[in-house]
Length: 481
Image 1 (spheres, rainbow, N blue to C red):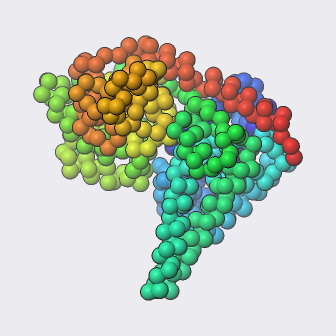
Image 2: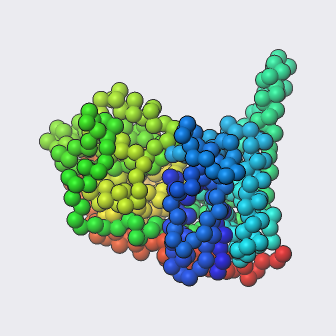
Image 3: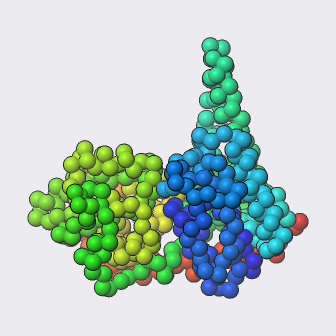
């Protein structure tokens, strides 16, 4: 099968890019061909051997940015800031969006002429996917969650802007700005609806996302397919012999005078992700203040390593400084092999997201052999809840005698422990800290071998790609030009 992957973002530095790369590797293993069109501000982005790439070039924010032929004179926009771009769909001009569309239309046209794909797999239900539907080939769109957040935002803000425009006291400049934003948001709405309506199929990555898509785009539920995200088993797996002294000597910390990561800890906690508000890293830092102190009283030193970067970098580091967190270390962006070694050294991973569409890092942590503590929202419960019972986001006593609903942990009103980890309420630093202490002091124990087996049996990309490939084939077989 000849597959054309199209994304408006890089293939690295964010969950959707990581997923797309894992899928490409698995498709190639199964004998399919894969070409990819992507946004980038560098030509040195990671490439999968055996795949072909066509770059839509942007200009990085840095003064010493790479000069690329035909690059757009601004950075690539996203729904939230990326690890290598602070540009978003909310601060770019509509004419910039049109220039991006022109570049993508040209890139797809060239692939249609030279590669002749049988199916286009578009990432995110947004502008780039809408362009894909202009060509005579079936398009399958994967929802990643931030696209639905973006669509929800414009639905909310369009009437608010229209109401503001009724104010006769607005200055000419204010009125012009509001009208420009309204025009841009209405355009986003039209393009997202075209993508959803004209695609052959929609892939959602969690039950929560399926429910949200069907609410936002009524009448299209028949084309929706729930297919879980997968992880690359070559990247994330058990490693028996990671030497922590040698490993940490390769990393630098923003929190020590000599920039070295100490190794005199007793327990290790990790976070991996981009520095965006919805990731809840601020809650993690507040929680670290609590669990560090509680574990210190038990005679053990806890170290927390935070992997990633983004627009909130300075803000989060200042928060850690204000909290006087001596054992929290920001180590920047890291490659999958480094993250895998770090995860293998870790006692627990934290995923404190406020709204996580899926949570690929949850699966990657499980695959490296430890429990994960995460918030009870979005797609995360789909992963960590293997109890066979429903876990309510808001639990009340009316469920007490319902055998199909899981009761929260004793003494809590919203913490749930499963064989894979612990789910805690969103924006609750105290519950998060209590869960961390319960894992680190052995109050709650987990069978790490079973955790690894569960991840591999349910989320390996090779297995999940079979379902995606079957969907592609079905769309090809039933496509009418």
